[in-house]
Image (cartoon, rainbow, N blue to C red; front, side):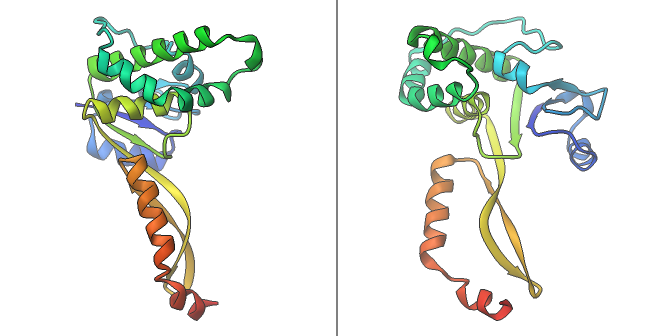
Length: 194
């Protein structure tokens, strides 16, 4: 079973991952590489869909459902792609659309053929390629978990700490966060510490 980690490598994360997975079954999308024996894709390779050390044998075609999913999320994907483009106005709509489709096709092939059974991301999907990975995981029922810092501050042992958020669904994450803010259930605890 393979695991995809979207996170810069650190000793703590490497030790944690090694406790749960065999070393050769983990793929990292990382900005820095500490563990020289691990399979890593850097951010540029992930964005361009050209990892140097991973070759896929089979290629799966996109289905009508894939195109429906792409069309539903096209505006958001296009906006995320624009964040990485230097001359946005010099690249036409059809070129960007083709790039988005080809990226979706690459990541679908990678996740299904490698095969990746679980994905863990240190942040909620916020880059072009990790949003595509998230969409494919949710559509094809590949387990995904993302961890993110929140602006929520909680009292803990007479001090305040910033909370982390664990989720596997962007929509539920937003709904839960808004509901917590409406309830304002921690106000008395905050006042005690302040």
